[in-house]
Amino acid sequence: MSKQLWKPGNMLYPLPAVMVSCKRADEIPNIITVAWAGTICTNPAMVSISIRKERYSYDIIKDSGEFVINLVTDKLVKAADWCGVKSGRDFDKFARMNLTPEAGSTVSVPLIAESPVNIECKVEEIKELGSHDMFIARVTAVWADEEYMDEKGKFLLNDTGLVTYSHGEYFSLGKKLGKFGYSVQKKKK
Image (cartoon, rainbow, N blue to C red):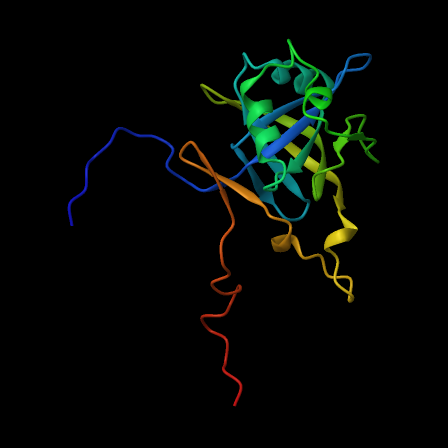
């Protein structure tokens, strides 16, 4: 096996591609696409997103203390890419991408109606790290699209066409390889 030694960097891929909606009072809402997003705690439910200080959404989220993580599907990937390349200083991203802002239940930030999952968040801490600052937030509500509920009420998240981001490219989730605990599960006779 032959490998190259590289300088320290982030090669922890794939990551969820998410559109983060944010809004300041009396301004139009904005959307920033981030790949630096993740789960950090189950109870209480907490997440993090990391944003560069120079990004337009940084101050909006810092000032409002709220944001919504909207999961991206194959139907939304072009809008997600566009929202990550263009600045909210110059465009109304909801209007330009024909996305529907929908009122949240615990935040003043709109959800993206076309997303199958919307995670309402309130910032608890901003950690200055270097190129990006991490917004650590408490999850205050989660919306799941009823279109993906089975007859027993189970949410079929993996049927929504979720998209991941890996080393500069977007990918649809692939085939199922197993489920949690399958490697130690006893086989039925």
